[in-house]
Image: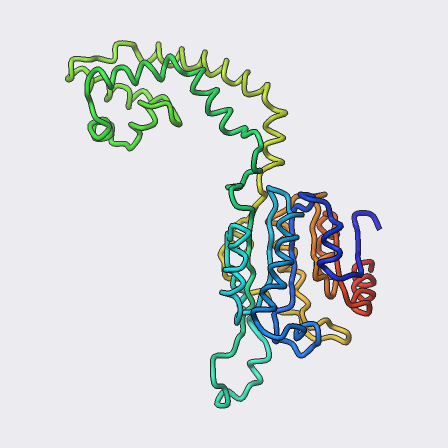
Length: 341
């Protein structure tokens, strides 16, 4: 199937064959250690050995994830703190998401027999590369180039305002008080420069006149100059369209709206039991939310603990490319069939 690569192998061995910086999004659900009775969740003698193994996995995930990529790693509540600290050794942790399930086996528990609070949540650690700050490391920054270009083009106006302020010795506090704004830093410095509106400019003229350093140009003169320079600036920016498109591609994607979960507490209902259900299957709505939020169409999504194949199915539904890795042959065949349906 197009856009689909499924690998039946140990995750560490399979990951070593994936090229550096080739994956846009990683969504994966490794063993939680001694949460399930299955052998795959009890193959380490202690927590330290489990975390050491998980760090080996993280090393490979760090290598294959693009500089602008995002990693979502599921973990159990018991080792959530240990897992987050481990992730911080290699990644910048953006969010520690709490998946608070609205229903589950605790409803059938005899509450009086409990000796601690029942773990009704799972956690999702969302990470990016250190130093990327949402942008590809080492990439040419369109934003910085446009800021520099804007300062260069509007230099005559910027210098006009800066010179008047410096000569008059008027403070930003006085300017803000006279105009009823907090815009002094925008009008009288190159950083994020803006032209005041006509009423604000008249207030500035009155203030500077009292300081014997009047702003002599009329507002119409300034507005005419701003329009002329703005046209020049617009033409220059237009010539950077190709660079702008490159910049957008290199930035770490993240898109949410008020219609979807945008806080770090999620309440997706867990997958209900059905014959042949994988014990760790994640709900399609949750996976689709992650994929939509942190990737674009046609990008590459990796799940190196594929399990049921639910991630792969969500990825293909949303028109992305999927790489899935699963060690267990029987589970792999089930996932292969599930994804291909």
